[in-house]
Image 1 (tube, one colour):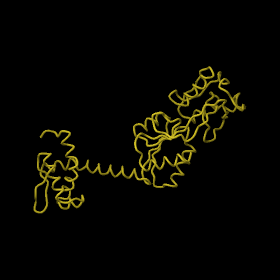
Image 2 (cartoon, rainbow, N blue to C red):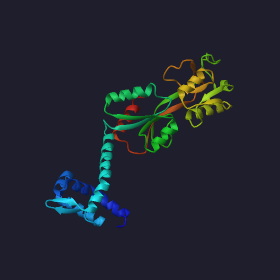
Image 3 (cartoon, rainbow, N blue to C red):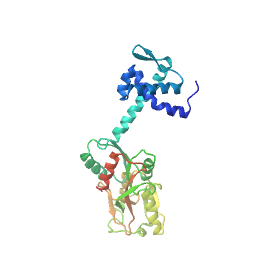
Image 4 (cartoon, one colour):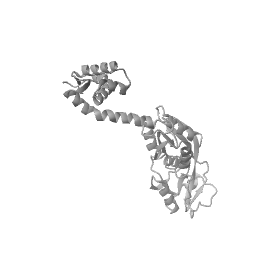
Length: 295
């Protein structure tokens, strides 16, 4: 027999549940009871499936029915995929449960040791059955995962313009230097004071690096970046060892060996709570509301 075209497959797909129930029960009446439909409706679905397929699926055996050879072949081929589909649907429904579902949540590398865990702990205390799958990454990586559906919700600094977002705060940027640095005792520092300094910074794809470059450019110089690194704790450690200065947000945990100094006309960044262009599940909406009203 030739392969089914798309229209035939589409017409057959809703009928396969009826076929599977009858095949497993070996009895049309019992299969109808399992599906919660009249026996006459189930019988019509089975005849419609046979018409689309072009061969008989069942043969009568007393009061029961038995699969034909072709029906047995089809049953063996679709039994596992159909049960997998049932499990996938059940899992999706469980994940959408407003109090026991799954939320895939992302947050930036500059947050995490204190603020985000405290926020999530408070949320968990109110909704203990909620499951959270957490991702910590830099802004572009978080945005990409929101866009393609791998994340439901993310805190981003700043939020990308193409995604729905709510501003939930601002992050002040300061100069971080080693304790022995010549500027360590200053009450404030301007960009021009840093023209001759060596910098430790993120790669250029990071928003914080772009902010650093732009702020220095306004003062008439390009920062001399000696070390580029993605990991913020190591970046601060390099600063503490006198390898350069850095423009960073306040650390959430103590950073031995460094001093944080306010900047004149300091740049800051908006903190956004970002979601995708899809309708959120009840679980996602609950976490969104909690974060929006907590920060």
